[in-house]
Length: 135
Image 1 (cartoon, one colour):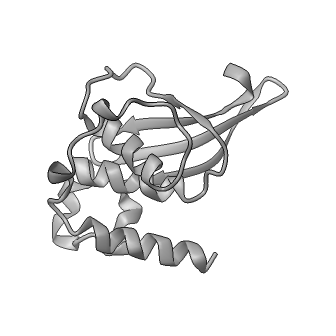
Image 2 (cartoon, helix red, strand yellow; image 1 turned 45 degrees about the vertical axis):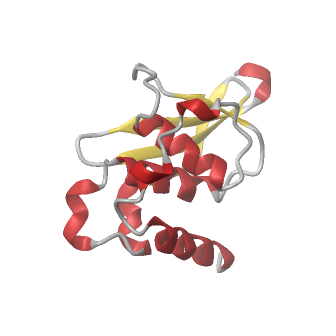
């Protein structure tokens, strides 16, 4: 692992966005924390929009949710996915950065705020923050 940094893994399934924090110890990887965009339903994602849990706003909020538990610098692992600017990958990373995660990605890669406003993401972000205070 590069410089002993934890990896943030981004994956997309047919229905959800998945994010994980992976750490290595003694040449063994372990998942320290994992979240799925399905978790957003607990924080106010509209139930009638369950089919949108792999959209740009869902990717952003999944990154924001995972970012609540990251306190150190991390590197991004996108596996075999193509690195396309303004894609779900970078919406996810924008969510991480907005949660305070130290990750090295250029701002020009992020989708615009207008593309993320399809849902009331500010309300859901506040619910995520409030839930984090109660942990």
